[in-house]
Image (cartoon, rainbow over all chains, first blue to last red; front, side):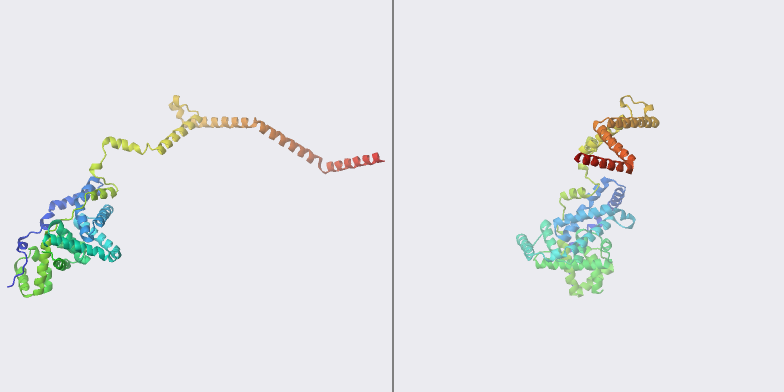
Length: 213
Length: 202
C-alpha cells in the first residue's frame, strides 16, 4: 500500500484548540457577560482585554493591514457594547457570538472596499513579491515565526474570502468545526471541504514562492 | 470510500482524530487515488507551515483606543483617586457660566426678598408665612406705584405739557360752545369793521 508523505508528527499531535478553551474559560466568559450586562465597568474592561487579541488577529489575517485591523477591532467592540443584550449564554458560546459578529463586519468591509482593492497598484504587488523573495533567499526558504507570519499574510490574500476565513478560523484561531459552522452559518461538511481546499491552495501558493513546508 | 467522502474525513485524519474502520478506509482510498493523495499532501504541508507562524499580536495602544471609544469604560490605571473625584465633581460647577448663573440667581432672590420686605439678617419663621409675604408684596407694590405716579406728575415738563393741553382743550371747548352763531358774529364784526373804514375814506 502506498503511503502518503504526511509528517508523522501529525498523527500524535493533539490540536491546541482541544485544550485551549477549558470549561473554566467558558464559565469566565459567561460570568463576564453577566457582569457587563449588570453595568459593571470593570467587567467590560476585562472582556475587552480578554478578547482583543482574537478579534484583532482575525481582522489582521483577513485584511492584511494593521491599520484596518485596528479600526475593525474597535468597531467590533463598539458593536459588542451596543448589542451584548442580544447575546444569550444559553444559546451558544460568547466566543462564537463574538467571532460571528467580527466575521460579519469583515465581510461588510470586504464588500465596501472591493473597488479600492481592484485599483491597488501593480507596483505595490510587485513590492510585496520582491520583499518575499528577498526574505526567502535570506532564510533558504525555511521560514518560521514572524517571517513565516508575513509570508502567510501574503499567501492568505491569494485565497477567496470563503476559503481564507475558514483557514483563519480553524488553523489560526483554533475554533472547532462545529463552532466555525455556526459562525459561517454553513453545514460542518462545507466547513471541512472549504478548509481542505483552502489549505491545498495555500500550499500551492507557498510552493510557487519556493517556501519550504 | 469516494473522493467526496474522503474530503470530509481528511480534516479529522490530519487532526489525528480519525480512528478504526474510517481511518483504514481512508488510507486505502489514498493508496489508489493520486488526486486525493496530492490533496492530502498539500493539506498536511499547509498545516505544518501554519504551525510555525508566530501569532498576530495587537499593538499596545489598541486597548487604549478601544477604552477611549467605549462610552462608559475606562481602564483601572485611569481611574481617579477620591480627592480627584471630589475636586472633579466641582470642576463643572466652577465654570464661569455656572458661577455667573448662580450669582444672578442669588441676586434675583435677594432683590425679590428686599422688595417683599423680608430682612434676611433678621429672618424669622413667621416671616416666611405666604400670607404675610403676599401682603408685604401688595403693600410695597401700591406704595411703589403711588410714588412713581407722584414723581411723574411733579415733573416740570409733564406739568407744562399738561397745562398746554388744557389750554388747547379749553379753547376748543370755548369755540365749540359758540357754535355756528359765533362764526356769524365774527363775520358781522368783520363787515362792521369794513364799513368803518369806508366811512373814514369818505
